[in-house]
Length: 167
Image (cartoon, rainbow, N blue to C red):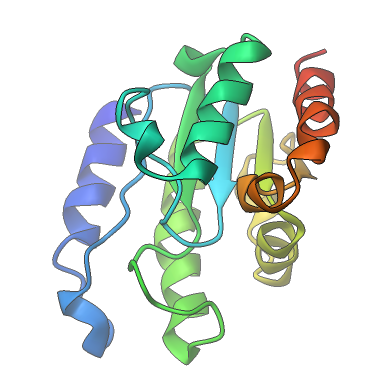
């Protein structure tokens, strides 16, 4: 899987599908194949716990993953849209999401895709990509870390929803 993902990431970096080619790219990371933690746009996910405090949403995400003893080594982290700053409703966004995420999904064939937020879930379903996980992939959504930042009283509920996925 690693060489396939590395190859996909190498193809994403010089992507020239639209005029957003100069935007930074949010590349997937992780070695796991059981779970995919998916965000809509590449703004939250950082590979390191130490850099996670760069913003409150990252901090909440990694705090929650640690608290529920999430199997990080079994998880791949990525986003549907790869260009940082490209809005989901941009015409090229869904084309690129289908192109790049479909390749990641086929390479990983996860057991569960965890969408961070209902918007991510709706976008994924609208692209009809969920079925590429070899037919046995469940797709669920939990609250986005941004929702927790805006209402920290939801943290415990969010944490429980992640624990439930691990059962």
